[in-house]
Length: 239
Image 1 (tube, rainbow, N blue to C red):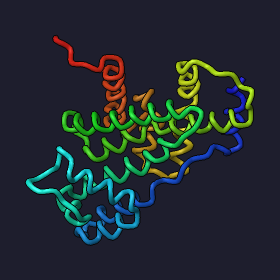
Image 2: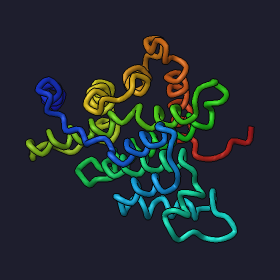
Image 3: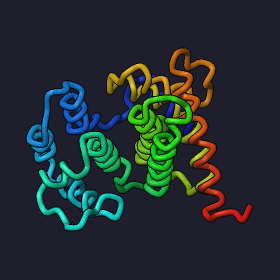
Image 4: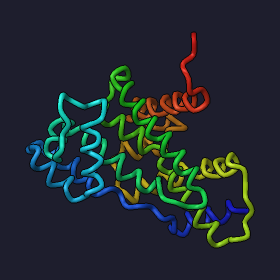
């Protein structure tokens, strides 16, 4: 009964898509320009105090911690490097949309957790597929963001139907997956994403349709398999 309402939402272009993270976009533009230093990165990041705290915390994490802790944004940026800062900015700011409360918040957070895992897997395997690791990370992170937006769309429909009964989580997720590619493509167009990122969102279930972006999209599809194994078997196999 809900499917026609979601179809109507899409047809009316009434799907609520969160804005693309402005800080993450500006950081990528600064880095892509080539002429930048810590001061330029700090100027962008400092406009988002939550992100500032996240960057400093990341610089002091086990993965990056040096002999001393850093206490300032500039020290943290110098330790992390521009590529890592761009990744953190994108993941942290998009993660806020995925972490909102709602009647299906558990599904939204699960979808985001899987997207983060996919991004890490894509970056780690990028060299084996001879693709750019930064693009691989972004494609892995974004390819299933349509699921996050789809969950929010279902919540919007449910808000207008207070008598709608509870359903098993698997049934809700099946409904999300029914629309996540279509809503993902809509999201990519609203955000005016690069062609390769749009291809990842549109074709990760049909890699052959990805054209020149097949290597990256194929890596994303592979990461979904890895994420599935991790979700179902969260321990190290003996053999």
